[in-house]
Length: 614
Picture 1 (cartoon, one colour):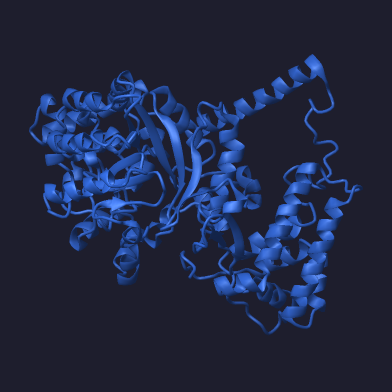
Picture 2: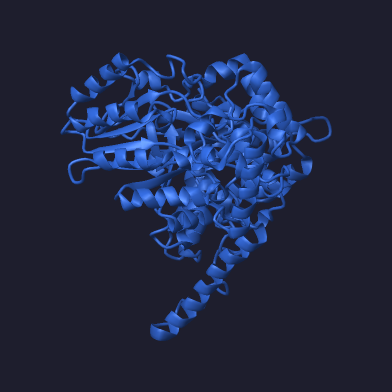
């Protein structure tokens, strides 16, 4: 089964002509083949010849263009194979054959989109070394950087000048796009103004603001109340009202609300904060679709990997415990929104006996050396219950490491008060047992002075703080994630994972093609120092676990369908140890994503190489 999003295909004849002009030899083979099967065989033979040409000693293509050409050939072979057609239910070769042989006068094309034509056009060019990444010809005579062919100090000086150009590019993009951190004095000042407004409306004091329990009592869930602090767009008002009417998870802590700008769409960073917590029209529409909502439940199939209540285990040496299934603020794309309950509900806060049973399961599995305490957000538990959990693991000699997954550093940094810090200090006991905080900062605009102070306190205890970022449409512009990495490191947080967004249908508005994530890793993150680019790009595949996106051996493109979506097959981490099932995933079309970027003012020529990341 293909997991992904359905769209109404659209196609223009101009785009068809552009595709068929991209590689005359492929067009000739398609036109001269009476049937689809003959066309398939002819294309196989043609791709073999293309590969032989690239491997020939006399091939003039630049070595980097040769590598890209071979990648394109491999992808092309796979997507026209009968096996891929069987897995995905779409025939790319049939679509191409019909495009080449259709009668324009009396035929209208249906079943494909312009996004499909764009993908195929770049493949048509790529298999003959005309990607255009390095030069128009692929041979690279005049385009070679000045330091190539030089030696010693002369080469070093020219290369240093070349690298200056790369750093200048980074700074220019930051300036042009207005990337800003919540640590800037002007922004801190505006947030203090928001805080004063919130306290005034709630008739509360600054002392109460510093108490995380006060924030938990005053979570904003009503559009009218929120509009007393910030302006909401009509779409945002409808989203909040629909969430309330239909029982969809929604809430904003007073602290997080203070991070937002007064006017909607004030800047792209504020859009990221709002989109993360305010349900958009696409999310609402899909969640009110009974089938989509049912599919959203346990999307990651945690029930299939739960050997005990509140426990999830996918890997040999680590398991998850979920002692509290509630968050003060739900991310729209949360993987566990199906499981979260209202605070105080017995499902959210299980009885101590149930929790003790979960701890006993860990005690009886000495091969597990690490535990992730997550939920919900475990740091919204009271200290007494949190201590019972930490004390339980402290008694297990085989548990060497405890991770606590929490977003309170972003939404409730005042949670890290002296009582909690003292509790963590008692159970952080290197080298026997260590505690690590794993948080989720999406955008540099979410960073606050209060977060920086809390992180500083944790670091002084010797506790590491790691970040897991989800790569979405709202933080995926050129160098936007690089800027986040730099700002995180500046306050003591280490980038840990860069997650591809899960394939849940209700999160389509957030989706970014895998190709863009790979492009970010190779073209932007790679320019940063190694101490900054420490995160690993992964796709957390339902029931299979984390899949390394930089590694071709962990996934491959098996089809490009009529909507222009790349369809991937993901392989489990234990693929060389056991015959575990694979996972088929349908991605967001690259052309659609580029249209999204263009709509917010991006120059999509800056993303030209995206087509050749597989």
